[in-house]
Every structure is written in C-alpha cells, then in structure tokens.
Image (cartoon, rainbow, N blue to C red; front, side, top):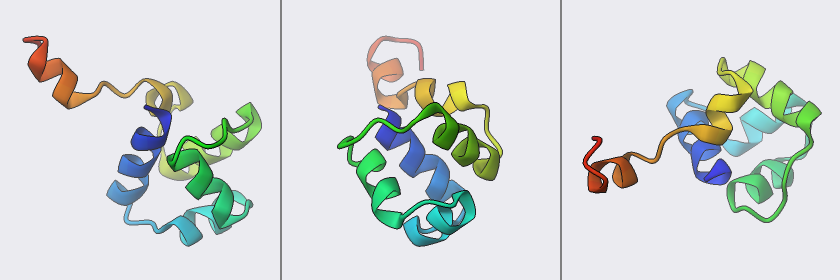
Length: 75
C-alpha cells in the first residue's frame, strides 16, 4: 500500500522518480525500491518525502484504496 500510495502522490505532483529523489536528497533507486515495496523507508526519509509532496506522512501510509472501498460498499 505504501508503495502504491507514494507512486500515486508522486505522479499527481507531476514528479518523476529522479526528480523526487533529488528534491528529498536520496538516490532514485531508493524511491523506486519504496514504490516496489522492496524496502521500508526510514521515518526521516518519509518526512522529507511527505514535505516535498505536500502531504502529511500518515496520508502516504494510509491513503484508502479506492477499489477496496468500492467493493466494501463505502465508495
């Protein structure tokens, strides 16, 4: 879920993986690994990512999955 949410927010902000990585001060492979759920980022990195994306950290972790909400009758 974290990886999908991060990708959605990054794309909505009009940022590529390389651009986001530069803005948060990490390697682009780290962003890619987070999006593909291969690593769990540190809290410090998540705060920097959230700040760049203009979102609270919890929102990136807990963005509701629209498809699951629709199947549960909440969407």
